[in-house]
Length: 153
Image 1 (cartoon, rainbow, N blue to C red):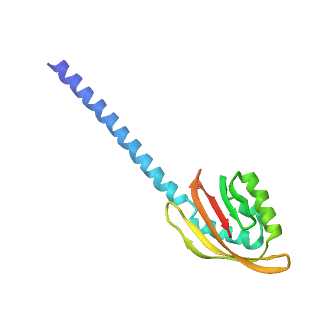
Image 2 (cartoon, helix red, strand yellow; image 1 turned 60 degrees about the vertical axis):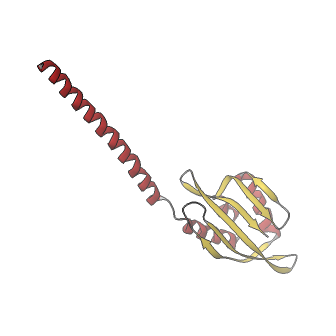
Image 3 (cartoon, rainbow, N blue to C red; image 1 turned 180 degrees about the vertical axis):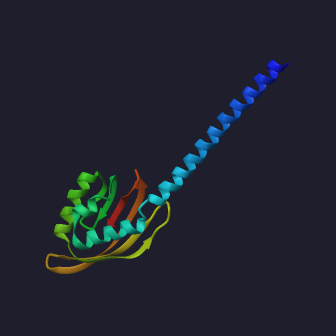
């Protein structure tokens, strides 16, 4: 009888230790999610950097936010998904042809899933001044905000 009681106590202790490790692992996973969320750069800060890059016509600054497959719809007829490398040259060409005179976001919507911003891209093209509406959306991927879509029409 003592032998069964000892085995029962040992099994109870082992079971308790295994269960507490499981609970600790779950708590650790939950805490890691919380820490990751608090360390995430706010989308508003990314939009501020993007706004500055576009206003200056700075392709290098803007390109660090390109996703591996960013969708473009531009007023020069370019439309489709492009790799980050292709996007660099595409935007460089666009900025060269449609020289920015000013750019500012007018509306920035930041939520956890799909932040986006809209603004006005004022430019000079063949000596004439004009303006286009801009739409940019972001997605959080691989611990960074990435541009998923740029529309300038």
